[in-house]
Length: 91
Image 1 (cartoon, rainbow, N blue to C red):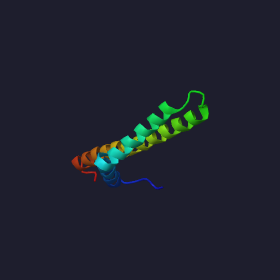
Image 2: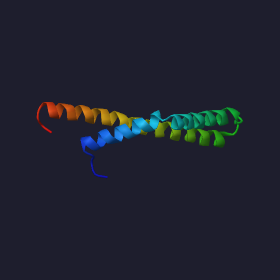
Image 3: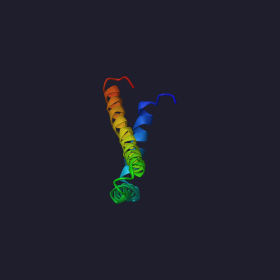
Image 4: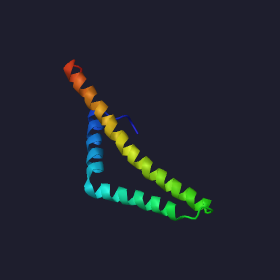
């Protein structure tokens, strides 16, 4: 994938922010997290294979949210870059 322009990064940031702030998305992500935690709590201590699978699910959930947040932060930096560029007549 080729590098994105600062404008594209800002656009992606806004889409990511809207996504994470959407009430249905929040509810779905919270429900998934809660279900994973409940499954972990309900798994017998000796069932290490299942506990490892649940741990992987939890980390996938966490990494998904972190990746969306990375888009938001990248967009914030791109927005600052655009503002500074305009201030100095670069863009």
